[in-house]
Image (cartoon, rainbow, N blue to C red; front, side):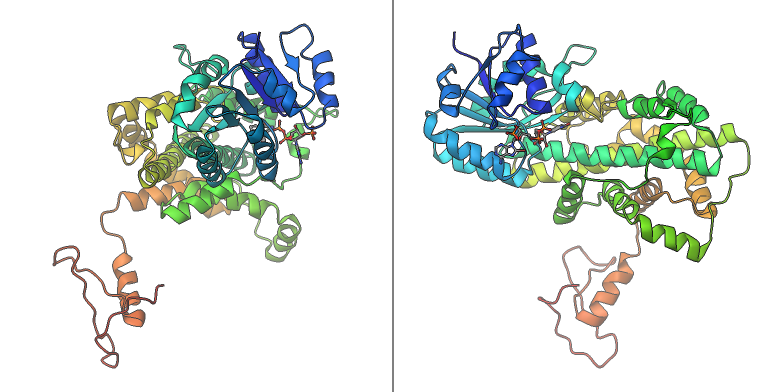
Length: 482
Ligand code: NBP
């Protein structure tokens, strides 16, 4: 019997996805650049399963049922192009190549277009959930050639995580690089969630002077509220993990965060699209700032402004902090969906935002109960421009606002850095303000660059220029942009 799918790449993700596919009744052929790893896999984790190995790409292709489905789970970048180039001569029209790596979506757009010309159907699928997700149910975000989807759907929806209602956390996202785009935003939101949780931890530790055990108990409690999520759950676990000397291990970890680039891509994309994705972008900068460890150590000595202790009832502060975290998280997702919406409209992807929330509901790193409410919000109003205007989320934002303001104000007062909770609050303040001071910006731009402005007492679309000094001319600028 020919195999249902071939998977290339036997590192952590590939191996676990193959085992998951096998558990779900699909026959898989496994291949890897270093072919010895195929035998190691077959003799190790895959022993006793229906998984078969291939010794070459030709061997892999010969073992597949048509239309052939070949999934790449290799390092993103040139390696994907190299495998595609080697596979194309071996495949037939209508066969399907899937890239399941963390690819930057413009690469998927490019590969989709070039493979389409060759009659090969291409899918770029974001896969999230790490090792455990891959093994027992990841979130999968497939996009690309819609004609390929019916052939891949049973496999992907079979292996994907399921919600409590049994829905697969995988559905068709849209054409071209839409799947990888949505995965990119997912990763950006992951950056934001992690930074927000870290800020809450910092507030409790440095501001309130709570111990790791106390914070573990608080995060455990929070995980029973609207904040119920994988990241809050693992934060509680991390705080409870003791080093050999009985101290919390987390306190011994160097405070410099790494990054692989997907958060940065999200921020760059938001700037390209003109979307105020402030929170995720600030979370990327927070990692950049953290990496300047030596400079920070010197600057702390030079300024000698230690973070001040926060006075008052600790339990009340903890509850205010929970509200600040929840409200900030809503803003982060609201901004993420603003970016997705903009990209969908610009690329004509017709994305279903409720489905995107469903795909993130389980299996992935940002999985949370909260995503179920986001799905409901977009199902009730698919055109919702700002998640915070959905009644459920608006009520939460309104009720959390006083506590959120108190927490952010206290962080400024005490010198406790809080880039993302404060950026989220600043965003909401701006978004809910009908008149911003951009009138002054426009006046300045017109003053020095004759950029013109619209007037509040005239219809939109009429532009005016003023000779502010009496020395300039009446000619307005069309080229000089600031
Ligand atoms: P890696 O990203 O570590 O890639 C390892 C695979 O790439 C191996 O099969 C390796 O073959 C192959 N490879 C490399 Br590296 N260089 C190659 C080259 N020049 N030519 C051919 N093959 C080459 O594996 P991973 O961590 O399993 O991730 C796979 C994909 O999934 C990546 O795009 C990753 O970003 C994405 N992803 C990872 C996670 C995660 O938690 N790890 C989560 C979600 C998505 P070899 O064995 O011969 O060296």
